[in-house]
Every structure is written in C-alpha cells, then in structure tokens.
Length: 236
Image (tube, rainbow, N blue to C red; front, side, top):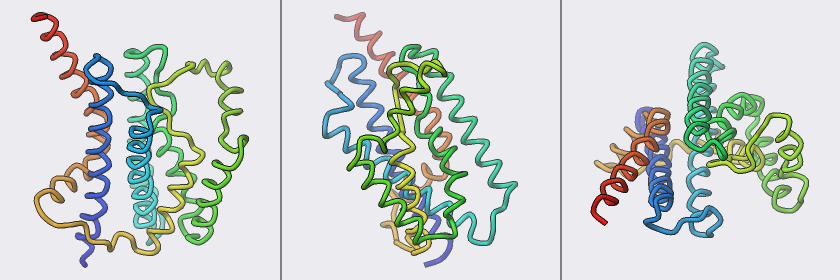
C-alpha cells in the first residue's frame, strides 16, 4: 500500500467522522425547531457521539505520529495548531451570540488544540501511551474524582462559564483516546485499507477539509432548518 493510499485511508476515516457529526448536528437542529425528539442523554445519541469522537481522536493520534515520525517540523505544526486554535475561538464567539446561556467553551476543537501539545509528550512512547490511555478510561469509569468535575466547579465562577453548554469534550477521558491513537499509529493503523470507490473518495475529500467543514457545516444546516421553519410557519 502506497503512502498516498495510507493518507487516503486516514482522510476517509476522518471524513466519516465529519459525516456522522453532520448527521448528529442535523438531528439536533431538527429537534431545536420541534421536528423530532432529541436528547444528549438518550443512549442512542450518546453512543452515536461516542463513535464520532472516537473516530476523530484515534485518527488524530495516528496523524500526530505520522506528522512527527521524522522529527517535529515546528513551523508546519504551529501553523496547524494556530488554525485549530482560531477555529476554537470562532466556535466560542459564534455560540456565545447564538446561545448566550449555553455557549461552547471547551468543545472538540478546543480539546484538539490542547491535545496536540500534550500528545507530543507521548508521540515517541507508544506503549506508555497505550497503558496510560487505557488507565485513563478505567479510572474515569471507576472513580468519581478522576472526571475533573471538581475542577469545572471551581473554575466556573472564576471564568464566568455558563451552567450549560451546547458542546463539551472533556479532556478526561478523551485524551486517553488520543493516546490509544498514538499507539495505533506506531502499529501502522494507517495501513488498513479503507474500501475504495466513489464513497471513499468523497469521504477522503471531506477528511482533507475537515476543519473548514467543521466550522461551517452547522451554520449551513441550522440556517437551512431555520429557513424551512420560517416558511413552514407561513403556511400553518
């Protein structure tokens, strides 16, 4: 399998995550305007989101390994890191105006922004990354203190954080998935062949432009459902 195919496979998996996220957000938009029932704590939607972030973060871990296999190219890395950071700021600002009582202060992009830096500590230590990653998930599910809710409770009044948020991606446990992805990158997960064809190419295209799609897709989807809602109100 050639290098291009390996990149195609990673882009396809990332594109699949983006596609599933669009489905998730579209369902939320339909629920927001009363067309379907949607609840984040519903088991189906909870697991649907888990699948999405698992895809995102394992691929992010693998990509971090590939990007640093010949050493860290700091200029390229910092440019990408800054792009993710600006995207995170854009999400925070836009949701602050759209949902002033539930704006996003630490969503997927905020998490990736932090994880890109902390992941560098483990990118050359795959077995340590695997053990620590699995340990994080075990402790998260076995204890009450390891989920860092106490830290949120402490920081909320200091930072003026809202009581609710449209999206939250907790550093614990999801950094554990980045670490697992780092291990899989060293085990050459990228060599797994994604089914070829038009669907794979379309997903790969979405994966290559995942940051841009992530930033604009909800504005488009929400706008379309809102426009349909306004039109629908004219005829009922």
